[in-house]
Length: 81
Image (cartoon, rainbow, N blue to C red; front, side, top):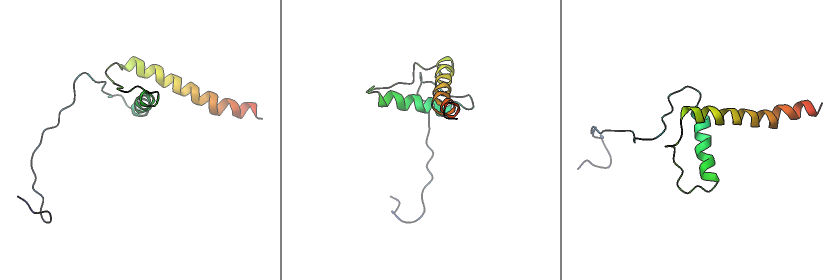
């Protein structure tokens, strides 16, 4: 057994991705996908799953987030002139 202090042993290990989950391979989609997963948790979904997500769904909720930001930030700037 290695001691708690001293050199660490380098032991090879294997990492594998779970199958059947949405894999984000496009640039710029990390935040919307993470926010959607947080929304699923926040709305009380006890077992949120990313298996139903597709690139088309990501495009849709990306547009929704953009419009929400526009309505909440840009529109009030023009109305409060």
